[in-house]
Amino acid sequence: MSTETLAEPLSRAGPRRLGSLRLRLMLGVPLLSGLVVAVFEWSLGGFESLREGLARTGLLVLLLSAAQLLFVEALLLRPLRRLAAGCEAMESAPMPLTPAADLPASGLAAELDRIGHAMRRARGSLWQQDQDARELRRELAQQRHLLEQARSALDANQRELASLARTDALTGIANPRVFDEALRREFKRAQRQRGLLALAVLDLDQFKQFNLAHGSVVGDRALQRVAALLNERFKRDTDVVARLGGEEFVVLLPGFGMAEAQGVLELLRDELRALRLPDGQGSLTLSVGLAAASPAHPYLSAQALMQAADEALYIAKHAGRDRLSLAA
Ligand SMILES: Nc1nc2c(ncn2[C@@H]2O[C@H](COP(=O)(O)OP(=O)(O)OP(=O)(O)O)[C@@H](O)[C@H]2O)c(=O)[nH]1
Image (cartoon, rainbow, N blue to C red; front, top):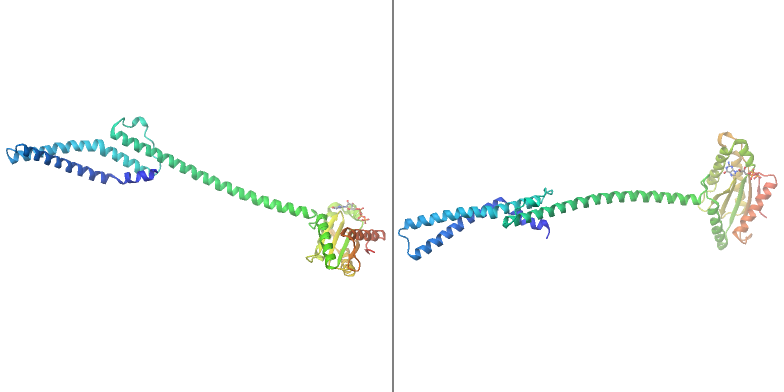
């Protein structure tokens, strides 16, 4: 049974109810006893006079009342009041515990005091457990909050890592791995659908000289400008622009044949030549090797298409740079 259940009826027996109990005992028991004695004596021989009988009965009632008052007060009501007070105290914060040595040693009062004492101890212990549980709940909420923060930081790190694994750190465009995947995917699609696929390898001319003349920091910014220009020019969903490494870039144009791709790449070369480089540091030119797969001009594999574009670039370089060369 919980202490609340135990405490309720006892604490409800407050001072008013105990007072009424005392009144009933004080009046009822002596009157009843006096009446019984009077009837008994009268049956044995009767009183000499009615007055004498009434006086003896009244005296008896008074004596019994006094004795009963002492008995009820000392042995019953006082301990009950203490017990009720203990129960009321259980409704609030724990009371300081009475040391066991202070409790009466024996008798009804001692028993009731022990019960009250035990109930207060139980209440104190429950109160303490409740406090501990609240503290634990607070700590748990804090830990949960920290865990949420750590989880979202981890998610952000994972997203960043995934992005780093797919992009070129300097320019932010796709890296060779992403390009390889796209080339294989688009080549298979073009084969399946008997479509067109153009592939251009682009290499900045004399970039070593540019770096030497302007420094590698300016060289880095020039590479970023070129990447941004490529991104702007080739922005269809299916276009793929990547940096293969150093000053070499690649563009994959699904749906484009040789002539169409050549047209946009020549425009790009013009734009690059006119590109304002950081701090007005001269200009750059571009050599391009272009290959295109079509039903009329198929390639055996994606690697073969790539190799054809590479060979075309080699020819453009050896023919004097700053030009676009078509694969045979
Ligand atoms: N600033 C900068 N330079 C780079 C980077 N990667 C490669 N390079 C430089 O690019 C230059 C490439 O030189 P080369 O391979 O000789 O090519 P090139 O000078 O452009 O000559 P051609 O290709 O024959 O026209 C080297 O000096 C590299 O150090 C980079 O990320 N930043």
